[in-house]
Image (tube, rainbow, N blue to C red):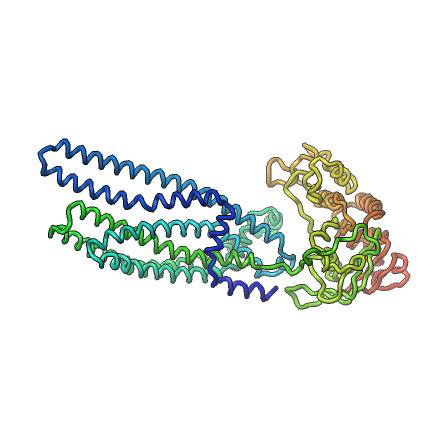
Amino acid sequence: MTGLLVGQRLETRHRLHIPKAIGLLWQAAPGWSCLSAVLLALQAGLPLIQLYLMKLTVDAVTVAVGVADKEAAFGRVLLLIGLMGGATLAAVLLSSAARVVGQAQAQVLTDHVQDVIHAQSVALDLAYYEDARFYDTLHRAQQEAPYRPTSIVNGVVNVVQNAVTLVAIAGLLIAVHWAIPVVLAASLVPGILLRLKFSGVLFKWHSDRSTVDRAATYLNWILTGQFYAKEIRIFDLGALFIQRFHDLRDRLRREKIGIALRQATGELVAETGAAAAILGCLALIVYRTVQGVLTLGDMVMFYQAFQRGQAYLRQLLEGLAGLYEDNLYLCHFYDFLDLAPAVTGPSGGRDVPRPLNNGIVFDGVDFRYPTGDAVVLTDINLTIRPGQVIALVGENGSGKTTLAKLLCRFYDPTSGRITVDGIDLRDLEPAAWRNQFGVLFQDFAQYQMTAAENIRMGDIGLAPGDGKILAAARRSGAHGVLAKLPKGYETMLGKWFGQGEELSVGQWQKVALARAFVRDAQVLVLDALTSAMDPKAEFNVFNAVRELAARQTVILISHRFSTIRMADHIVMLKDGRIVEEGTHDQLIDQRGEYAQLFQLQARYNR
């Protein structure tokens, strides 16, 4: 995976993503897309109609000056003015309708792209979240993806509309002189080439500074979020983090302003040349009018056509430059989408055994994390029987939690295999296998939702008022806390939304434990089960676990020997290896690593 992130970014940068962006729009909003195409066609022809009506009006005024029947001539002028007004009103209405349709398209497409990002985030392996380069990729995708596809679609619409109108106007201008459209195009090309150049410069700058920008975002989160609020105040860290944030943003700002100054200098030179071309073409149109080749109406029409032509050509070329820029930045989105999970199952994989008969077997398992070189687990041979309470014990870093992650198939072993009733986990669909688990992680989630929803997240197939929610809360010890809240189980937990109630760490842990209990799981993995609970709550919880063990396999990861000693089987890990296993009494009699740790904790607790 390490090389994957880098290689894909270099490859994706040079692909054409515009067709994909249009495909995204059609997938997200086909109705709005059709309506937008109709409006585009109507808007493209109106400028030419307006120009021609202006010519007829000016010529009619010129004729009216020299005729005797002024009223009749003025009537014809009024009719033309009325038609011009109608065309102008139609242009305004079409523009307003296009703006509404464009906003609707943009909103639908943005929401659709966010859905795609969320789906991809959930589908990717846990290993990606342990690679700093993945966070750069995700950060860039989150920055660019919500609006770049919309920008591309709008750019394509504008380019097509401007191109159609420009072709018609170029046909008019050729009537004055064939060189005018050529001069018109040549006057704007240097500025557009400059825009393309600096689009590439800015793209490289944004890509190279992703880590710095993400570091500033992280500092902003530290300064404004709840998680660090207590330490920032007790250690007086506010000024330090504010200064670090300021230094990073100052660096980014100075670099970007430098690029902007270089671009502005080049644009000044290019715009000066464009202005000279405008004046030269205007002089030619006036000269042809003075010589009588053109009428006064022709002069007004051609001059306006030239002005509008320059504007449309500018918009066309800038649209093309914008599409080039959007295409560059959209590669970040497809860099992210091109990431593929390594932990997958075969199509039409085998069914998960239910119930388990023989249990789960670790057979010669070695493991190292994809982003690291150190071997975390070595030659793990372990059998977990159905209905057994097994405890994993060892010092921090001994491999206990990693073993549980492999069991949940967040990763696959580097070598060896894990089987369930003789079936290799790699032959099972990962989601189907994980559905057999109820898990309390050491870093359990605290959902800013109601108490009932917090528990129901363990099995979203349950109805909101299902009695299993209350039963799980009673089993975990959370019921006594939740029942006393202002709105009971409908009380919002946390302080992010509404009138929420904050819980202590131990109370939150009981809610998270209820979330693990509520699922009809075959295996319970409880990491640091009672780390935040008092002894009485710990005793009650373990009794509940014992009740569940009659029909579920329970894996405890704990440092508390008062909990561990009641397990059916205890596995002692050290430096990623199983060094001892057996019952509590058997391990005490061996007087090995387990006995030493038990005696140390016993002396500490006296």
